[in-house]
Length: 198
View (spheres, rainbow, N blue to C red):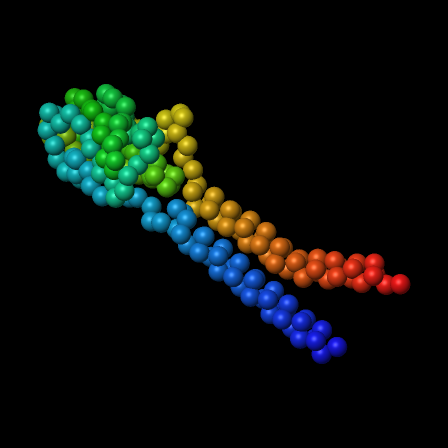
């Protein structure tokens, strides 16, 4: 009887140890997944936000804090009349996105961008610069630029959500396994005793 009580305490202690180990493993999985890493952000631009440039400016360059997914970047530049003055699709290499523009009208130009970081996080925003040589006529309608679309074939993901869901599933599976093991063992032991009874 004393031996059974000691064995029962040991199995309970073993069960608790396995449960704690499972939870620590799950937390480490969550803490080291891509979702836990910092997301990229816009570091600088050329032309700089709020700057004044000449009509000779022929490109917009955006620099981000970390690398971006190739082919998943979009940049749209609109003049004071709301027309798209971007002449080429945005191209990216590493953490830099570049688009060519044709600046024909003076005044405020709005830049909208949408990129996807290597971790799958979508980064979008806007900035503006002014082209020297005139402003939009008073009372002229200025269109609000829509968010540019991410190119087809790219997979903007929610990496952090994916990692959280996966870690949660691992926790549940490990918890079920750890907590169910002693009851399976007891059931197996009781079958053995019934089978060996005369």
